[in-house]
Image (cartoon, rainbow, N blue to C red; front, side, top):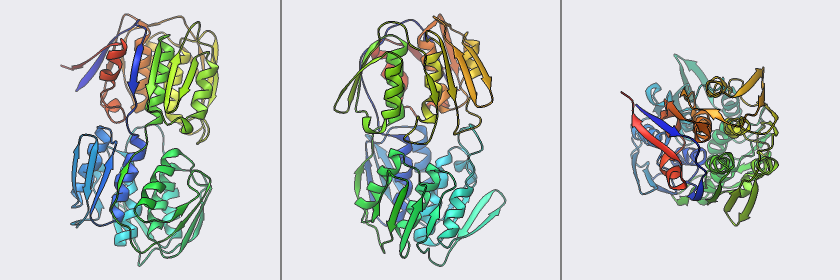
Amino acid sequence: MDKFIVFGGNRLEGEVEVNGAKNAVLPLMCAALLTRGETIIDNVPNLRDVRTMCQLLESMGASTHFENRTVHIDTSALEKFEADYELVRKMRASVLVLGPLLARYNKAKVSLPGGCAIGARPIDLHLRGLEALGANIDLKGGYIEATCEQLTGASYRFDYPTVGGTENLIMAAALCKGRTILENAAREPEIVDLANFINAMGGNISGAGSDLIVIEGVEELKPTRYSVMSDRIEAGTFIAAGIITKGEVLVKNCPVDGMKAVLERFRATGAQLTIQGNDVLVKMEGPIQPIDIRTQPHPGFPTDMQAQMMALMSVADGRSAISETVFENRFMHVSELRRMGADIICEGSMAVIRGKERLEGAPVMATDLRASACLVLAGLVSRGVTEIRRIYHLDRGYERIEEKLQPLGAKIQRVAES
C-alpha cells in the first residue's frame, strides 16, 4: 500500500493538463453494453476505477483493451448478466450496468453498490424509475435481480435529481419501446456527455443538461468511437492548488462551461482567473479571502469540490462556512485537517472554518476520494512534513497526481508503506 510524503511551503508555477473525466467515462463504458461489437472511447484516464470497470465488463464476457488513454470494449460475446459483489463493492458506478443490461437482454443481477463511504446514497430512485419502464425488481441476498419482457417508455419524475439514477434510466430508455420523459433529472455535464455518446451510437435523446430529458427509444444502437469530456473536478483541484500555494498555474483542457459555480467561488477568494478557451490561468497574490459555500446539484456548487475548498478556507484570512446538502457524511476529512492545526467546528451539515496563516504537517489518513485531494492541498501549504496514508482512494479519481504536481514545484513523493 502506498502513501504520500508532502513537504510543504513551495509556490506552484507552470502548466498542468486535465485528464478525461472519471465520472463521465464510467457511464460511457457501461453504455457500451447497449450495442453489439467494439466500442472505442478516447481520452480515458488511467484510474483504479476504470480498471475495475474493465474487470467488471470482462466478468460478463466482454473483452476490453486499455492502452494509451483509449479503451476498446467488445460486447459481441457477452454471456453473463451478473455484476458480482467482489467487484461492485469497490466502486459504486458498477450499478450503472443495471439499465443497459435490462434494456438489451431483459435481465440483470447486480450487487448492491459500494464505493466511498460518504453517505447512504440509496438507489431506490434508480429502481423505481426502472419499474416505471416495466422492470420487475427483487432484492435478494444483497443483490438486485431485475427482469422484464420489454421495457416500455413512460414518464417518470425523480424525487431528487440523482446523477446515477438519471444515467441508469437514460441507458435503459435508449432501447425502450416508445418515448420516455424524465422530469427533475440531474443536469450535470457528465449527463450531457452520456447522452451525446448514445446519440453517436444512433440514439435519440434530447434535453440533457436540463431537468427535462426526452428519450425516443430505438430498436438498435451501433458501436462508435467517442472522446470523453475533461474532468471538471480534477481541473478545480489544480486551480485550488494554485490558489492555496499563492502560485501561478495554467490549467489546460478545462471544461469551463461546466465549472461556472466553482470558478465564481474561486474568484471570490481574490484569485485572478483568466480563461483562454479551455485553459484557465490562475494567479494568487495577497491573502486568501474567506467565502461561504453551499453544495448543491449542478449547476450549483459540486459536492465533489467541497473538501478541496475546505482545505483552501483553512488558510484563508477570516471565517468561512460550508454547508453540505448532498451527502450527510462528507465531513470525514475535518478530523484529519484538525490534526494539521485547522480550526474547524462542525454543526450538523455545516462546517465553520477560521483560517490560519499556516497549517502544520502531520500523519493523516484519507477517508475517501475527494478527502484525499483535500489533504494533498493542505500538505502543500503546511509547515514541515505531511504523511498521507490510504491514498488508494486518490488513485480512484486522480491519475498519478504527484507526477502532475512535481513539475509545478511541489515536493511530494509516493512511497510504499512498510
